[in-house]
Amino acid sequence: MTELFHSNGFEVVLADDLKDLSTMQEQVRDIAHQLLGKPNTQVEHDLNYLHESFASAKEVDDFRLKLTTEIAESINFGQRIYKIFNSYLEPLVGVDVLAQKTPNLVFQPPEYPVPTELHRDAPANSPYEIIVWLPFVDCFRTKSMYLLNRKFSRIAAEHIRDNPKDRPGFDNILLDHAELMDVPFGSALVFWSGLFHGSIVNKEKESRLSLNTRYKNLFTPLGLKDPFRYFDVLKTSSLTKLGIDFELKEQLD
Image 1 (tube, rainbow, N blue to C red):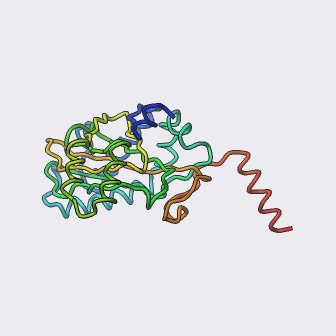
Image 2 (cartoon, helix red, strand yellow):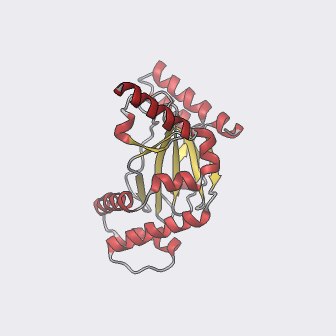
Image 3 (tube, rainbow, N blue to C red):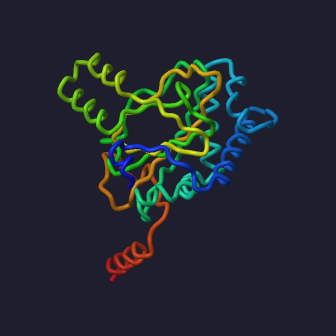
């Protein structure tokens, strides 16, 4: 773990395999344009201006759900993202890894009226879990997302606990300390499940298209959710395979 991740709870990291990430970006564009019946041009332009195909927020939501389903069925996203950012993720999560079953795809056109609400994943999810927030276009200013770092997420959580009716006080913490992330394509925002995060209305002229997915170590403590309902086993070490084989044999003897 880097010192920056430990102190802040997040870090923007570069892809180890930009070629495969670019291939994934193109696959996402191809699927999107197949759903829309549009011809392909330049991939970044196509994704940045997807919003030109929609006349209402409902059309945007319907499209996002269809695109999420198609991506989950046709792109091995969990394995590939872990590999693309392996040099950073493996020291955090290890070699016995659970990966989220279905990705969360976010599509926010300019002025889309339903941004992602402020929330944090833990304690409902495991506090031993990381989120990889992967943009398929350059994300900056209001086209991106915001988060509170480790220090201010703790302060915000304590404020909610001690002053549950003081929403203005909580909002002031958010306004004073939330950071809008600058995450260009070719990188990902990796952050801890205990951080507060969300988004605001996209005031830029381009669409935001991003995917977020979660990883945790197989042997770390669980959150309140059943991990095997939301996660698949991505990979295990040779030692873990030996241990599982041994325990299965012992139970059968």
